[in-house]
Image (cartoon, rainbow, N blue to C red; front, side, top):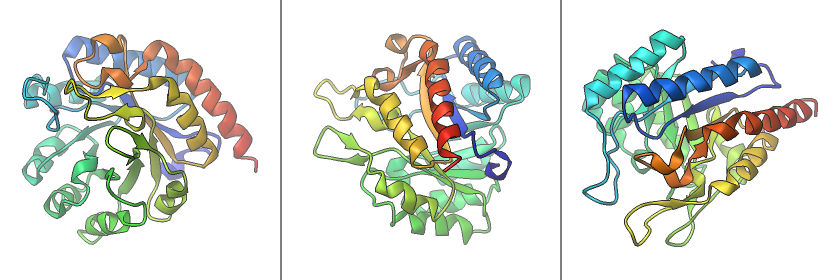
Length: 265
């Protein structure tokens, strides 16, 4: 995948946090395709078919696993775009692999051996999000679990490290270390989260999304991961740290200008 991307471009993984319904998912996908086609930017559409890690019991978790997976498959078919979703247990790997191109390992589960091996054995691309509690160097062992299970198609995503109790910080030294292990993506929306808020709903500082994305591009990440929505205030999951899709094209134009400049260095 990454060998086919020109030096002046990068991979974009984008979409809503969760699949909330077919109409809104297709609307977001259509907008993403329109923008990335205009910019000749490779896209992977993302959406969680189920949210397993929620602070409160009454938080939105999904519309039903198969219903959401079928929507992801429809987006893949109608727009001819690869799709990615999270899995949370080894038993989900084979099921999800029937509908998506890339299986994502959530950050909290990056050390789960059975989950990594189960994902690897599907022969899908495996994207491992770095645990908030892990160093960049320690991700070597997560990558090894996938590769030693017979799957060389692995990539890593940096999404911030826990700093204190209610904040995350991106240590850009880690990008260089992660890139030694596998192609590396920077998640610029989960990295601006303010987790474990007293209300039981995660907060965020989306005004820092572009700053992080710019720093990632300068540090030569292979791709940018972001969650986006037509109306983040109405999103059923992670709305506080999402990018309004109306602001996406401007952000990507800025990042491509930076990428073109840095690719000449």
